Image (cartoon, rainbow, N blue to C red; front, side, top):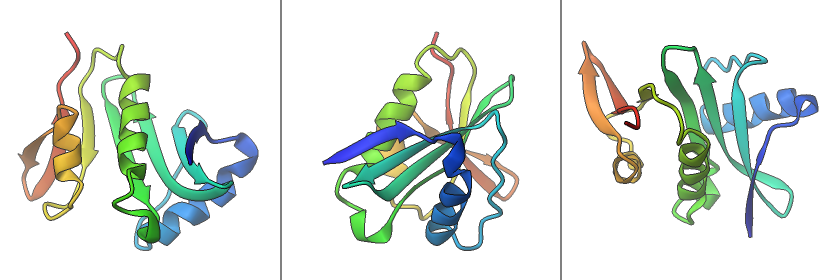
Amino acid sequence: MINIRMLRSSELDLAKQFIRTIFPRAMVQITDDDTILLAEEDEKLVGFAHIIDDGERVILQGIGVEKSMRGQGVGTLLIEHTMEMLSEIERPIFLKVKVMNPAIDLYARYGFFIKKFGTTHVLVKKPNT
């Protein structure tokens, strides 16, 4: 069974290491104001969601699932928990993705649509109004 929970402050380094295993080229920067959700199975990390609220918008800095667990609903659980947490937000939510990301269809089910900013493609969810 998959459990979704908030990062404990004592786990910051562990979370950064885990994120780097999923996104090896990513510059992982987490501030005290960021929210990190962790997905666990049998107390083993299998996924994460990194949420940044800069006051003007919310940025889903990253959502990732361990390769062996992809396609088993972990990403869906993470996005469901994230959207539930952000359900009262009245600002846009941004998620930068690669155009070929197979999770784009998952994000679309939660109201995200692709918007192009120059050469960068970003998924955007309009504010709840």
